[in-house]
Image (cartoon, rainbow, N blue to C red; front, side, top):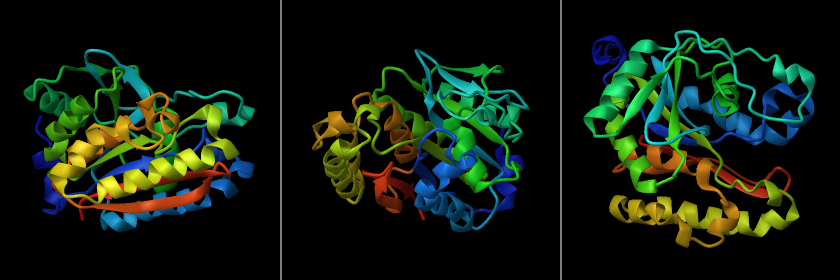
Length: 277
């Protein structure tokens, strides 16, 4: 099934893509954590207004779902919940975010990837992890926008994930919002004061890289390991890789920083970006 006939009628405008820093664990559901995420929450709440209309669906590329050799595409019409965190209050393991899935969008995603020579498979068992349901809850608290989750490849090849974004770009004209969900800094061992300097160094490089002309920007991002403090900011780059897909789906379009602070987790510089107008 081609979604263009279903989704593109809502508007002829092309949706932007986003790379979002999704914060720590189930923070919107923990009162004592919400205060420390106020700026992030405001940036996520602003996204529906930036779009100017309700998307027909969200395709969420989550740092918390890794597959190897074939991209996983969530295909259940009513996805379950996956509480992929530890050490949080008991009620956070009973959270329900009952957004519908979209088997039609899942089929479309798998077809687009296959047409680009990228193996993909439908996964009817995968549930929403917190890389998906946490930002989605802040953006759309009524859970009334269908969501399909898409995995990243565990080998974390930037070029592969840019190619994935390119393959998915037609969805932007079908009123599907493509979002990469991760963190611009993700080193759990250095979330305290020791992370302040490396996070600031890497974020300054990232901001500058994303302001460059399209070809230069892409080359810099694909070689991100050469950035200042790169391997401190991302000892394991699972939370950076969703950026590659968001960028690949809008690689020739301008970037805008839509969230930035230097007190995330108390000491960390973190950012989120929009690609396209």
